[in-house]
Image 1: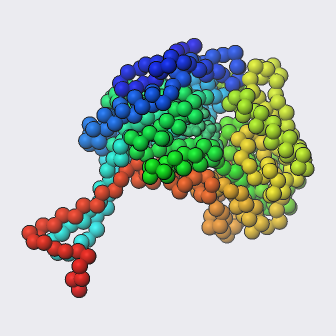
Image 2: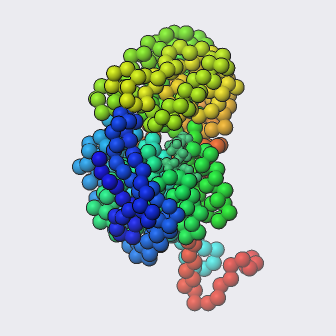
Image 3: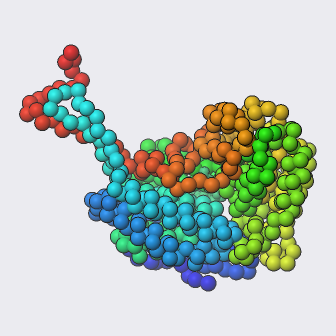
Amino acid sequence: MENYQNFINGKWQDCKSGKTFENRNPADWDEVVGIFPKSDKEDVEMAVKSAREGFNDWRLTPAPKRGDILKKVGDIMVDRKEEIARLMTREMGKIIHETRGDVQEGIDTAYYAASEGRRLLGHNAPSELENKMNLSFRMPIGVAGIITPWNFPMAIPTWKIFPALVCGNTIVFKPASDTPATATELVKILLEAGLPPNVINIVHGGGGKVGTAIVNNTDVDVISFTGSSEVGQTIAEAGGRQLKRVSLELGGKNAQIVMDDANLELAIEGVLWGAFGTTGQRCTATSRLILHEDIHDKFMEMLVAHTKNLKIGNGLNEDVNVGPCVNEGQREIVEKYVKIGKKEGGTLVCGGEQMNDGECSKGFFYKPTIFTGITPDMTIAQEEIFGPVLSVLKIKSLEEAIEVLNGTIYGLSSSIYTQDVNSAFKAIRDIEAGITYINGPTIGAEAHMPFGGVKATGNGHREGGWEVYEFFSETKAVYVDFSGKLQRAQIDNY
Ligand code: NAP
């Protein structure tokens, strides 16, 4: 067990109050992974001041040089991948194959960011006047407040921090209270790679105190938040009052459609991975399965058999498929929704209870759970559960499938299994979601593609890919007049 600290103003230090909190292993609650500072507003204020000072030099560092540091970050992450993956599994429970993937996503994001340091393209456009040139440039914004959830402890912070850095911004980072250890390793790697000290600051502690203090600090210019829709709304309100740029990546209620012409074996593999990977605790998790009536019964028979074979346990064991819920509260939420599902008339076809046998006795395990007979208006067909619970809905046509899929407030990820090219293209056109997979599960984003959702999933920004670089930079339009005389645009010259 290690005692961890904040990193503020170039120094590892305890929080001002000296208070701490514990980070425990959800697969074995007896294990304390680390002790962390329980910071307050004044720690955030110091971190913001440090980041503001760091901005003076960092904004003038050439973007390709900033990118070179990200290249080194990627290299160090490659060397430390296994060690960080194991730490991540211990602090949040995800199975080791997935935590390796989480670190790999960070590596991919680092190398992509490094190359972006040599692009950061602006535009040029012709002038309407003679001997004049029009250009636009990407400028840094200032101090970026980064607030992240626990389900992708490395990938999500890197999606935000790396592009923000390449664009010339400095960082105040508040990771989730359930995953502060992985976040600390990321900061150590950035420093080892040569990032100037006050360009990155990390402040541990609860969302209500540290998160709120970052959002409300008027010297923080831009906020990038991933988490629940409830918290996202409060951040949007506070950010709106300050006219602050805010990116929100929020909840989802993602669905996989399986049509009657689909390759069923492939669709089974997809839904098992989509619904029960990360114990269903992904914003892109498959929470609804929309089955064509002609294959419904056959598909369910196959799916239930496969689901019952999933091995539940400590994610450090290489043969385990499903780890624990991240904490007791999250498992209670799952139990609450299972109760609601039964009460509203869903048919429980597998799971529906805690797993407390053997090595699972000390953690927050829950059996992969499937309900059939779900109708679109039921609570478990509408609300995000964030656990290993799948709601199955039966449909008669492609049109009905898409209508059901679109019938929630969210619009993050979606998937359709079909062999029919016309159905696939109709789905691409008509599904209301930021991501649509054809013959693939609802999970599996790649670092260089835009990531995010429509409707209540966010506020229209994207992470990943090229679009996040737009979010973390301001555009400056520049007019160069080399005519040697006063030329007036916006005057009627015609
Ligand atoms: P959460 O409770 O909203 O927490 C997210 C982060 O916000 C944590 O660091 C949390 O700190 C902090 N926070 C809490 N209250 C705050 C406040 N009032 N002001 C500022 N920050 C505050 O969400 P979560 O339970 O960690 O994550 C699960 C949710 O994230 C799900 O809804 C999921 O769909 C969503 N998610 C979305 C995406 C996406 O890209 N769309 C990706 C992953 C997850 P503490 O940890 O200290 O509470």
